[in-house]
Each structure stands twice: as structure tokens, then as C-alpha cells.
Length: 338
Image (cartoon, rainbow, N blue to C red; front, top):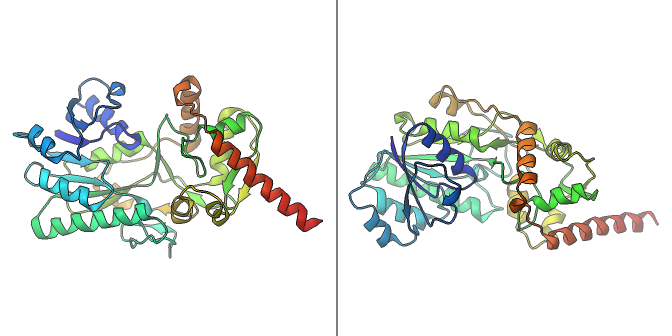
């Protein structure tokens, strides 16, 4: 198989890249080269900024692919550019959308690919929906061979999967745990969530590549494991070897007192119970199964980050904000009881 990835080094795409290269795929990566030093040998690099359409068209002259996948498109205009570049160069175009595009709040917590797409809380999700609409139009009217993939919360060894964190990543929450400080869990921590290790996601994704039954289809790829946020944070604390000190805070309050986009990231996503039905994926990729249990994956992630200080990015601003939120709740409690 001959494939081109736009991106190829991110959380979702890096595991796909590794597995394809191990399988002997002729894989091209089109990116700016900022993180290619972490790639395994074998990838063919086309170093360019995809936003420079004329330059990219020049570099792609004479090339064609079995599969082209864009991992970094977020707005319809970017898909319009992709269509111009690849309409005559690929047998399958895969767009990475988002499971956050599904109906929010859900009328039924069990999500299938037939669940309506609607998210009034998050512009990111609405843009992904608009991207899907554009591609479906090109498929129906022009025969553009698309497949839409909807990941949910996918993680790897470099980032701790969390609900509430700052702009500089998730390490500061782990640092608070190690310092015996309380950490914030949105809501009461009992809503169900689904997290998928990127190597499991990669198995499903690769099974859709070159799959004639996936053309014109939308498919989500997730684990079948459902866990609560309390369980997620307990697993992180256990991997760190500390006792969890959790402070539960309403998502609406977190959104109201932060400059972070918790309206989108929490109210439009992580604050809601989601359980995915992967029957469609398993029909298309019969051997797909997610084998990394969350607590096992988190232990791997924690061990990797502790061994690699370059991934321990501190976020003192977020740390101070957590202290202020927790103190404000404590003061409110005391004032009511006074």
C-alpha cells in the first residue's frame, strides 16, 4: 500500500505511522518537519506547510496514492484545499473528524454512527461537522472516495489523559498529586468516559485503509471499556504511588471562572456520559479489538513521563488557579455553615 499522511507525528497518527512502517507500507508524510526526529526509519518525508497549496502541488507532481489521510484539518476551507490537491491523486481520502461532533447533550448515551451530529457548546466540533458535510457533498456529487473517522479521547505515552488541565499540558496535575495537593475532577466524577490508547486506535484505522467497504462511510474508533472520571484519576494516582485527594467541582463553575474553553471541552464533551457502540467498525475490520486496559495504559504513560523529564512541563498559572478554585469552594462552605 502507498499512503500519504498530512501530519503523521501527533498523538493519534504517530502509532499508525509506526505500525504501517513495521508492516512495510510505502508511507509518505507531508509536514513541516518539527517532530520527525521521533519517527522510526522508513517514512518518506515531504517537508512543506500544507497551507502553501501551490508549493505542495508542485511537490506532489507525478505522485498518486492508495490512501491520503489528513490528521490536521479542522475547518471546511482546509478540506476544500485537500479536495483540489488530491481529487485525482488517491483512491481513498480519510478525514479525521471527532466523536465530540455527536449530539450534545445526548438523547441516548449509547453512541452509534447514526447518532445525530450537533454540538452547540463547542466551535471545534461544529467545524468538524461542517468539514464532514463538505466531504459528503463531494462524495455524493463528484464521487470523491472519502472515509470519515471519528476518534474520541485517544492518548499515548507522552500525555496523561485528563479532564481538567491547563494550556501547557497535563503534567501539572500529576505534579500536584506527587506534592500531596488536591486535584480538581469535573462534576461528581461518576459520568462514564471512554479512552483509547493510540496503538489500539491504529489497528482500527489501518483496517479501514484501502477497505472498499469503508468508502462513503463514517466510523468511530474507540475502546469498548467504559470508566468513570473517578476511576481515571484513581488510576493515575495509583500509577504515581500516591493517594488521590479529589475535589469535585461543577463543570459550569469551572467554565465560569476560567479563561480556558471548558464550555467546549467539558460541557461540550467530557462532562457527558458517552458509551460507544463499535459494531460498525467490527463489521468493517473483523479482527479489531482494543487490548490496552486503561489502568495498564496509564501505568505505561506515567512510567514514560517520569523517565523523560522533557515531557514534565510545569504550569504554575494552572496550579495557582486550582488553588484559588479549591479555596473559594472551601470559603463558600464555611460561610454557609457559619
